[in-house]
Length: 71
Image (cartoon, rainbow, N blue to C red; front, side):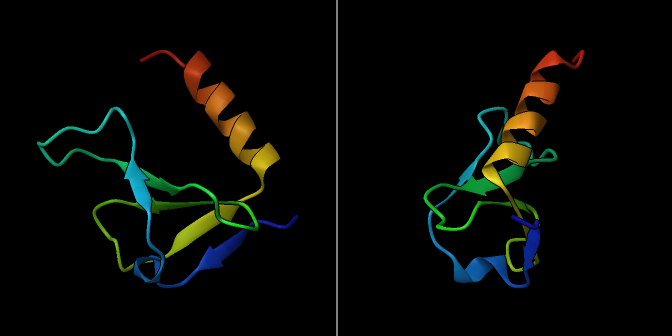
């Protein structure tokens, strides 16, 4: 599957923030579960902006890499 873009991510419902999000407005992403053709990801500070849709394989590789990275 080719990664794609959703131009207005606010049209979709059910976004969830990263568990690392806090109430201080830090840099956060939101993901949407159960999207039929991949994993949409958006910037939580720009909810009406675009979302990138990653293949499940690409998203899994990203998560695995992020977990290995020093914090």
